[in-house]
Length: 470
Image (cartoon, rainbow, N blue to C red; front, side):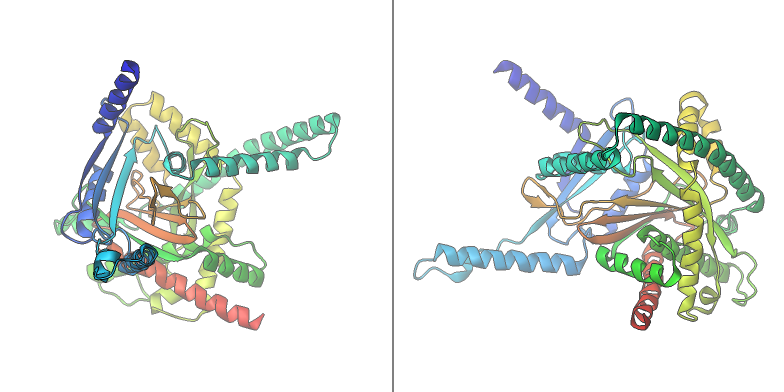
């Protein structure tokens, strides 16, 4: 009994050291933005803790974590559920109906979690979340079943000798891929650095500095639901069939985000030095993007330790195109951008660049001075304008202690030298976007996400027309 009490006290002390709880603040959405910004910019005292969670609670929708439409739908569901329970209880004669139904308003809790990057990456955090949810055993069983299915598919009905030969051939192919792919990746990296001597946002930062607006460390933050996952998948299938390619959902959103980055640069250009849209001086025809990649495909196996398994690659995508400059253009323009993005990402994803970057980063972080490591990372980013991370969540809503997790968003800490970070995430059949940026680079993050959704709408219209013609 005493040992159990002592263990419970130790757990409570550990939670008290890492977790804090309060009520929602008063200003809708803005207070939550400020709290997220603080967690992104203030350092974790690693000598004391490697992770922390901040919890706030209040009436449903009052924080702005979820949209007003979604919060109203939840409130309606709660009211209907209360009325059904009241009917089942069959209130006695003379008892007021509102007393039987109950007028308690739905409540929400917002959990803000962060950890040191050495402890966990985005996929690891999602795995930790799954261990805490009510469906933990079900999720673990699904992963184990998929793993067994994959192993059976790999082994098939081959004999022992054929399996050994097959493994040997895979090893040879892997060594050739690493050797030749590393050389090709290194040459591509050198080419990007030689042909991208400056970041398109450098002029923006300098102009903001002259006006006293370049406040170091301040972040512009926003998030939103983008579209149903099935709709995005259907769109990529239509566009893939029309182009004879294999376009992915990730390609789709990288294209939308690159269009938004270009529109942001055009807006800065117009504020700094108004010129005609067809004779721009600073808005590049191509921009570089950094794509973080989980080396295990975002999968953390049951009983596997957490950790950082993130690599990255930098690739070039279109910047200003005709339809950007004209503010609309022909329907085919968005799909032209998408095809160029698809080809660029496909080439880079087939290279070993993410593996190489992971181990180079690990070596630098372990053995080199912090300033050296920061400079190496910044040069390796090849003056990229934006980092885009893609996180895959659960197909169904999960629950914690009986409460539904309605929404989940990740926010990307900005890599050295990159002014904008965007996370594309799927959860419960919904694609969402979140942006973290330097305030001088993205003064209005809500507008930036609207630009992403504008490009998505153009692509959706293009896909609808193609579907009718097929």
